[in-house]
Length: 321
Image 1 (cartoon, helix red, strand yellow):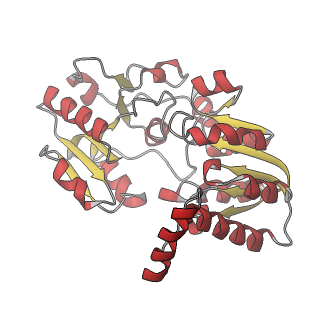
Image 2: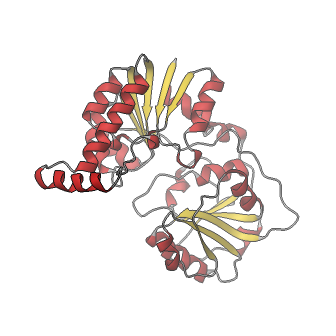
Image 3: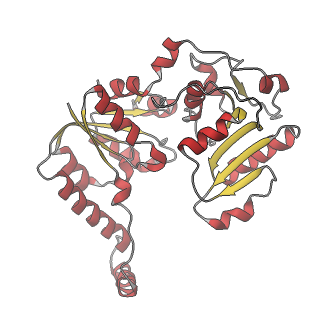
């Protein structure tokens, strides 16, 4: 089976999927659309032309050029190629013309939505282009008849050895968000005895002045791979704070399963999953207090059968079959 994954490889999320497909035996390929959907002006003259265009046309110049560039790139990439399945994770960046071209090159179209439809509402009108649509948001599945799916455990994630001494009680790395940062500040104030390490990533330096808590550190470069594992190894517990609109689980609970690290979260939906136990996962209440005994006790191992359900290989088989 020949498979094309059209997805941004931001934070190395997409490459492992294609690599695992190849390991299983699929002829798989990745088209990172982050490579061609970005638009930048060639110079001052084009900026002037853009303003003139916008005065006399409904479609903004930037949107028009991005669409044209995307179509040109897709034509070049897909020329002479055909696929059994095309999988897309962010359909909202493509328009009808793009979909018609992609569909002409594939026997089956599958979407795996990594954002809820409340966060990415433009995906709603694009559901029509797919034979099957998966979502990790239960409300979207109920309302739009989508197939439920979870996130997954990457195959390279393994149990971490217990260090001689922990450096932090709790650790989190996150993308800057005003509401979540305020929530985390409240957690830290409610648990002043905790030694925490909270890394807040943003590509915009103007957000640095908004990070004021001494246990929250602003960073401009994502923490990935061995650097992330190093922080996790030195921490007793992982902190995971969901967005207000999010009910599905992020990747962190699955990573915690793989690393055998306990996790604190504000998402009470985790209690509905078969891997949940009160020994390994603590759901924050209104007071945001974290019991000291939860922090200090070791992770209780989860059965290999349960863990296997959430491996990337199982995720791939569900999406393709």
